[in-house]
Image 1: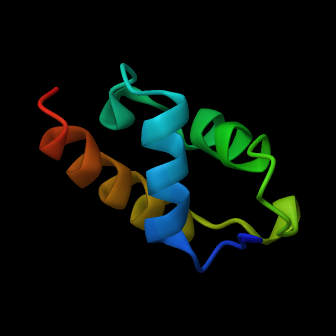
Image 2: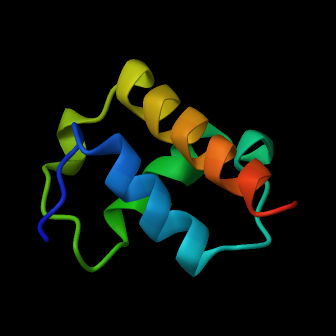
Image 3: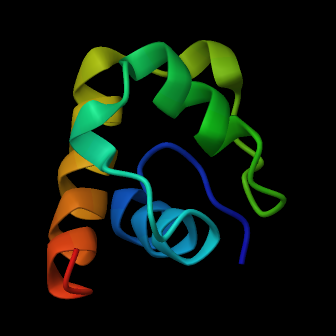
Length: 70
């Protein structure tokens, strides 16, 4: 599946799989943006990121992270 900025839930699932021990709330948005852009399935335009989009990804990732028992 090809991911873009609006796929926050799917991006979160890939991030939790790739970085299971990272606390999503400890990341700066610039670092989060780099992690998202670095996903092999991410095909979105890096310049189209915004604070709102990154926050949605961060919150979805945090929920998954909490559910995983971290």
